Length: 334
Ligand SMILES: [Zn+2]
Image 1 (cartoon, rainbow, N blue to C red):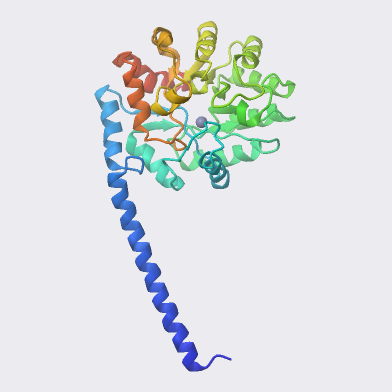
Image 2 (image 1 turned 180 degrees about the vertical axis):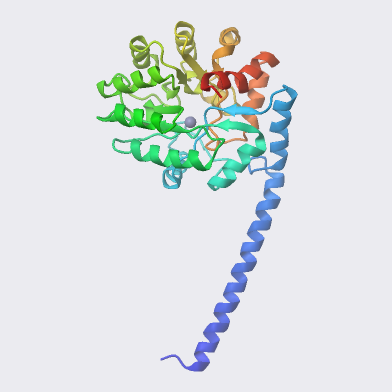
């Protein structure tokens, strides 16, 4: 039994503990503000100013980023743990530069002047895509500058829920052949590719064999899909890394094949899958087919790195304007 004196002592100790917790919270918030001013990877106003200067110098009204990720919080937490736990398949640390709450990530893209951005998400197993699509519809409804995005898996019913998502306003899909480990030629997907081609809704496909090959990555399996659905608008993620030349071949063969720049040409990616300088003239020739993508927020370096890496290619201001804005406006009908 606790005496009244004992109760008073406990109350005093609890109150002083609460005051200490308040002080700690205040210090943490102050530290976060200070950190954001000095750490380029930490939501820095200086980084936002540099990103804005980049597109203003090109005479653009802003950027369109075709490859950013927004997912249900529990799914995103797993993705971050996967990369930070060293399972990203790159054999080195992959710290998440923008590990922030959802509203801060959206605010940061707006501060960068990203006028429209995607909300790519993808399942790693059956029975998950329709649920992800319903979350994505909610995200699009509360985030008017986000492109309503959706996904699918090779499973019965995929054609029906993809058609349903398009009916609900989805204008961009994501297929991740490495994570999903399904065959894009699977018969359950034939209706999916058909519906996407018919509706002229683009699909971002991670089909390159980087950072680590999967059973169905590489140009072969998706080539068969394109042969069957030649009018499909397919945006090859990461410029098809590391099979850059083969995926540029596909873009040259099919008018609907595009490539996104996601992570390519950055110092981080150049160490993993260097872009061969000999292919640069083909990048220039494919100016109308290349779209800015960043992989925000799941990147181990500041957002600005992607833009500076594109500028370093030295393909000219017209090329940068097409890649960073105009191509996406055309492909997505913005
Ligand atoms: Zn991605």
